Length: 73
Image (cartoon, rainbow, N blue to C red; front, side, top):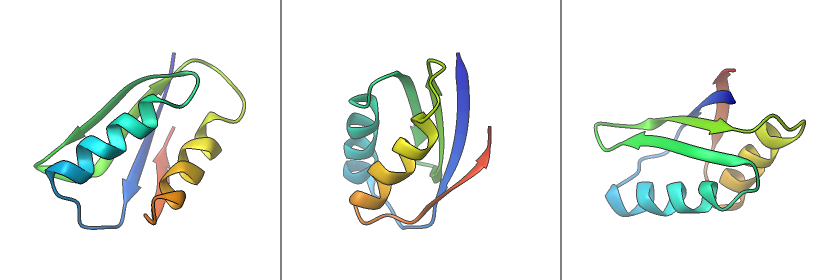
């Protein structure tokens, strides 16, 4: 299992956080998404080893109009 941490540079409410979690979990190879209302900018995502998952995650967030950066793998 691999983990990537992403920082989202947008203000998010509870509904937006739940929507993002659902969208990310729908991506193939993604197993777990952790976001908290107290720290909505930080996202930890666990995924099965696959070469393009990190970029797929960023593209999915960009398609929602969010500005995101990977800050740790």
